[in-house]
Image (cartoon, rainbow, N blue to C red):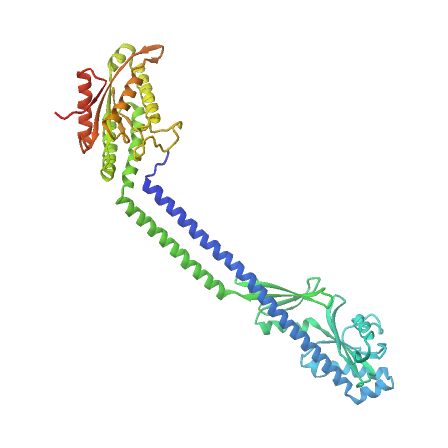
Length: 497
């Protein structure tokens, strides 16, 4: 079954569609803004984390320097180094793993080395991580870099991060012996251990992973926040001096408050859009009820019904009622614009003889052909416009377009047709159209190999000269048509007695 909607329904649905589109647009914009804010927030968190990581690495360097100076200040160390007592030096280095810096958790010490001025290994701790050989240095590139220094550069502390057995470490070389260095202490610490403090300084759960994706540290509440959509994931790669990634830190930033604010703002805007749409529909419907649009809409509906009943050729009484309804709406519109228009009634003389002589089937086909010829005249005439327009010749569609309305034609009886001429504002214009209709319909019809001649009589009334209501106008046009039949005229305009 085909659904039919009134003009008000169509306008309301259009407004609702626009409103829904607006609401969807609000949702899309808020979601886009959320993503945009997330991206910039992630960049800000990343910058803060980098700054904090730099501070922690600088602090680690300072603590390593303090540890090396504490070793240097011990008399036993200076004595043992002077005489190259390797075993005693090893013991002193091992003792450092049980001193304040390590036991208090300031640093996680991995290895200690003592080197001469040529960076030849003198002694190494047995505590800490194991190496493949006693002569193997962790981060040997640091020693090679220090060996290339000249003059006062040899008095400076040198540090860098590197990978040892797939694990990131931090190495610091500290000279000892005053302005004329006698040797160097190399401190190797766990880099990831000190970077753990980022979670406390930024108040965010973090996870530290190695290059092989092994997790070396994870905040206690990491798992609780892992699947929470209100937490933003921020990735932080840590690079060495050669800009190679040596470990990665993942952070989770709490966006609960931000999401709540965004959702509240979005919901308010969407509610406002919904209320605005509903209010707009109400106002438009109210305006429609008080304007000429409902009359145009009624004309639209009546034309559809006239078209349906015209093809049925059955309910002529209903067709006349619809024609009167259509005329009533046009009268209302013309009262507003104070313009005239014509009503025409056509009578097909001898049509009953066609039914009796050739049969009802031929008569019905004749009526269809009559309607077709009338439609062509109305479509091509310069004095005919569609109902609801005021411009002669103006149509809602091009003149060669097949339409379902047959312009303003309605079959009112067995051999009687009613026509509305909205753009024929004078008697002369209406007569011109009527003469063209008579000329067209008086031409022979070819129906089922029969040549049929009919004679057309027309009666015309003009609004508001011959009446200001639909019944009076139709009655006066009917009188004019009967006058044409009585006086053997083809066209007759109503004349008041």
